[in-house]
Length: 114
Length: 114
Picture: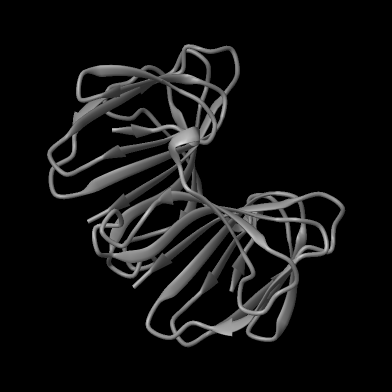
């Protein structure tokens, strides 16, 4: 089946106490749609100046794949500048956060697997 | 950890008897990196005129999320024109194929979960 962009769910959410709201386009809608293997598969858009607050993953793992813009990814306390085409992996037990310090939207795919 | 675009693996592969080779940028490299939950998480680039041949998924499920360009997705024999932001879901037991009939590269994320 094909779910068109118009049929998809879009949410705006302040994530983990970050600045502003992140635009979240749901590629898949639920754990059931992820075949029970995860809980999120989204296109994320972080506006300039916005952030995702630092948090630890407990019981799951999150992968970011950057598509547009640039920002600073906090990898367990270590800041790393990220660009389109980069992958950030936050394994179970690890911490991350993200800052869009640029002047264009920071777009990335986010996948959380158990 | 962050794996930069330069550090990632890129493969060119004729997929399922399709026309031409698909450029495959590995977001994650292996089933182990997918936490045992799947076997592929790639950015895929299908050049104009190229195709992915029709095939059935047996024992896994594949999701395409379209980023750039346009093409025709064959959804169990039913042709559907796809655009950026559309999601195509091929569940276990279903068939799909893909044609880039446009004049620009067709880019999409492909995720295979068990």
